Length: 297
Image 1 (cartoon, rainbow, N blue to C red):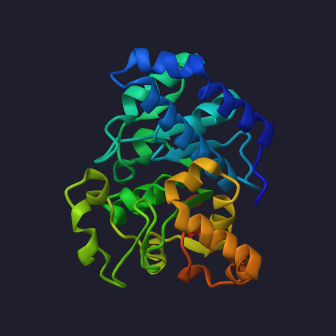
Image 2 (image 1 turned 60 degrees about the horizontal axis):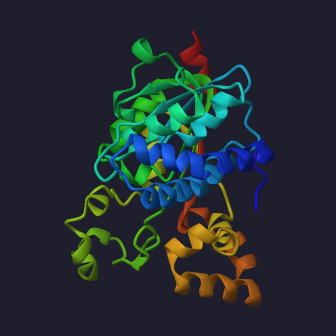
């Protein structure tokens, strides 16, 4: 697994937000029962490790940071506590309407009232209103953005000339839907007949079935240069063997497959698998040198 910045602080923070006192306070402040709150906090704490891992090797000090699709805001809260200038962008779109209430309760429990929140979509980012950001990141967010092209252009508009974006999300070039753990029709995932029972659910309706090729095309249109991180599919299977909450969500079959890949040496093959044909995908987007020069004039 890739080392994450502030690993000890991450684990300490997770212990704090999943503690009984935090669960009880959040349940009392919202309409959710304690069991649901505890399960949700455990799930998003696992995603916090993913989010912080995205920032490995990225300079954060004295830079404006934007967490895109912040969800509960855990990464923003932690970065703020560590002294970084981080803003949370969270519209609470379809399938995630519970976010704001629970996030506010967590923020109150942590005593972080001065954290900045932008309650809008990435497509509405405006440098004149919101300024520019040096670092943008998101974990498992892009697949839920309905206006993906507009969102990428919005992020590009508000990315500093020498800024960087880091995103991770499913790559539906691989015909598999990780939220539901089901195979999909290649190239026509929305038409997969055995997923019809999900089609009325808000979560399913939020999917845009993003692909690596689409990321490359839209990034180029937005004057961004993209580099995909290799080995992400291997890391996902490794996570199944180290993250019990993630393993439970994905199911016994996926855990068995991860063990089989480890025993057979298949993980070595996946580490060298073409990133554009792997899921999940992780990529970094920056401005080409020529575009930076033009933007800085």
